[in-house]
Length: 128
Image 1 (cartoon, rainbow, N blue to C red):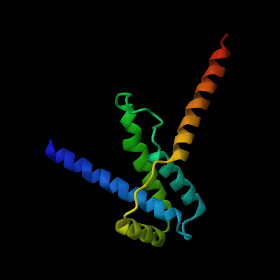
Image 2 (tube, helix red, strand yellow):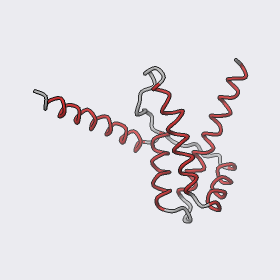
Image 3 (cartoon, rainbow, N blue to C red):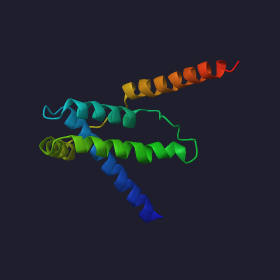
Image 4 (spheres, rainbow, N blue to C red):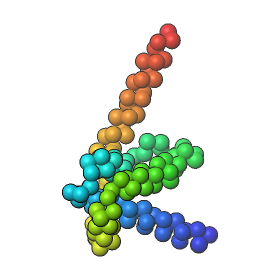
C-alpha cells in the first residue's frame, strides 16, 4: 500500500511539472498560436476548481482527471516546437511558482453544464 501511495505522489508531481511546463510554454513567443490555445484550455480545465464530471460519480468522476488531462498535456506538448518545449521544461524545473485555481476554467465548466441543461430542456420540451 505504501508503494502505491509513493507511485501516486510521483505521478502527481510529474503532472504538476507538466502543467508548469505548459504555463511557461504559453508565454514563449516560439510556441504556435494553436498550441497556446490548446495549452490554455488544458490549463483552465486542469486548474478549474470544479470538474466536467463531478468526482462523486463512481469511476467516471476520476476518469476525466486520469485520462483527459494527461491526454491534453501530451497532445499540447507534441505541438510545441522542441526548443520552446525544452526552455519551458527548464523554467518549470527551476520555478517556485504555484499554479492558481482557474476562474476561467470554472466559468467554462459551469457554462458547459448550463448549456447542456438548456439543450436537454429544449429537447425534452419537443416531446410534449
